[in-house]
Length: 101
Image (cartoon, rainbow, N blue to C red):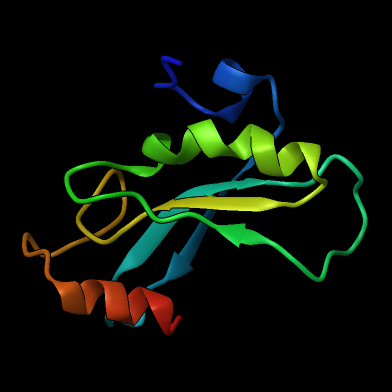
């Protein structure tokens, strides 16, 4: 599946652009929130994590699986990836900041 744009263009799914502060002070992480089709409160949600050298688009392929199960999904760009802020340095500690956010 060649998924390279966004949830609406590639999958026909509505989404919201989101941003939130990283625990690494001064950085903003950016992503997409794909709500579940049944627009009700959920106790479960999925947060995807792309691999090194990639961005949130790498995770688009899993969104339909969770969407069919009525589970919302957050796809975001890690620090120094995609359009999230960064300092030119990527390390495992950046992932720890994100996990604790």
